Image (cartoon, rainbow, N blue to C red; front, side, top):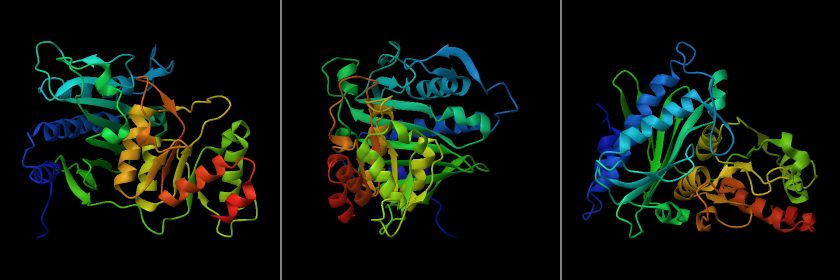
Length: 343
């Protein structure tokens, strides 16, 4: 019989590689996995119970809060607030840093999370997900503060996501490779299904971008997409176009198949639309650990020093060679021919 490796066993085995480990980081990952099981239980009941639709309120970004957003936010917070591992928490659904309740001990890590990315898609049964990022506490504040959350992505000690689709998968890294676990609903356990994930080389030539925004893009971004589609006549191997509109699902496909996901800046969102801390940095950390890259079009996402909790950024994620191709097109607005020749 093939050995069955649960996520708990895998985390323990990873922890043994670091003799000084206290187990706190492992416990955070256990609790996130538990929260994911609770979230998928509700996701799978969507349409059967009153969990669809909006709450009638808006979040810090001015976006309508959906019932599942609020549910996922609460489940994750309550799963991790009491164990003494965290000094503070930040959620995409909350404007400010969330303090650990005073009745519980404070720990040495900060957790940031997007509780339910792409939640508007749940009404039409499209894959959605949860994204999380973990940093070490760096402030002198006894119970953590904003400083602990505003750290560049290169300082992450762990990051991951859960995709709720035809199956539920949890993918995470602690800086020692990327590993994926599929939930077996018959036993309620996440089992190792994708060990040491690497973005394929050579990658599939897949471009994932919402080109309905084409008219709002910069000239360099338009030329990049035209080149990928073969419209400019300089690309003999055009990319296939795949865009789900759910960040976790689009990135999951890119991680397993290769290609590039892009959410560029445009005239409506000149600073980009995706959140640096809750979406871009954790996924870029995973991409880097799998041999890929994340960029804002000019620099590595992991090198950006955040200045605000809900900072936005353009995002290019996926196979290193394609992300670098995008950077060349964006940097050479006036020299498209030279750029195309290097692709």
